[in-house]
Image (cartoon, rainbow, N blue to C red):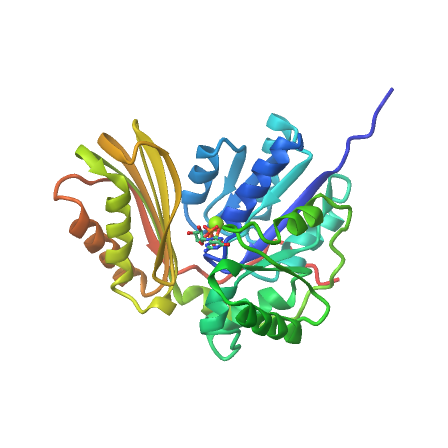
Length: 360
Ligand SMILES: Nc1nc2c(ncn2[C@@H]2O[C@H](COP(=O)(O)OP(=O)(O)OP(=O)(O)O)[C@@H](O)[C@H]2O)c(=O)[nH]1
Ligand SMILES: [Mg+2]
């Protein structure tokens, strides 16, 4: 007897750089794994060598990646990756994290999934994360380039997750909630913190529920969108090094990110993150708006011998300055001669050219 294949539930969680997508997605995947839901993850970036993919794999999660461009511009790659995941691990659900500077996802990712791949996928409502602490400081001013991007992301959202509630007061959270509802009056708002777990059950209920994406795309000016993306310098590198005996990896990571952050105004640092691995352990650290966080510490904090470092930085900067500043931060923290670059890329993202764009 032929049994029709079940559709895979496709969950897209977008939102600006550093808003907390990977932290939420990996938490969801761990939780779903415990309740026997088989989940695959797809990470995405404009360049190769992703901290997010290494991080999710270090957590034992099954993940693929689309690199060298966002899901919308690399839609066939996105589909190839999901197919690979489906073949290798038969997930019931795939959670995909688009690039943080990407928007117009309803027209370029969700509508194509709903029309061309309707037999294969059921697409959950578009979930967009908003860093509440950042919005308090920077707002959604469409007169600025990054404000335009964040405003559009919010405008097309079907569910908004106001993240990092642990960093703001209840009164400030309410202020942000009313700004959000002013922009997108019918959106469902979930107040969330990865630290206190506030709102996590609510997010999980949307992900596991039956509700599907049904919103129509919003207008967007691709020229402004392109300029907003191009304002960011995008730096990805991987290097190997020999660490002296008992190197304190936590201290090294913190000093590196702080040395880089020092070179820019806090609002220009969209997200800088590093992953350091050695035989002794693994560590991931992040810096958003100048705030450094330890996100993963496996094994010993003291490392030695051969280690590999991956650096991903997205900062409002010319690519040349960014590259020089990352290198100078590396020189400040690591002794000369220790670095051996395997890959290094630094550029301003080129104008988005979606593979599909379905307005209806
Ligand atoms: N205080 C606090 N920090 C958080 C929360 N969620 C995420 N973070 C931190 O914010 C930083 C960025 O989180 P990520 O999950 O990497 O953000 P992202 O949206 O995936 O970033 P990109 O992939 O660069 O776009 C990390 O250091 C997280 O630990 C939260 O709820 N509260
Ligand atoms: Mg991420």
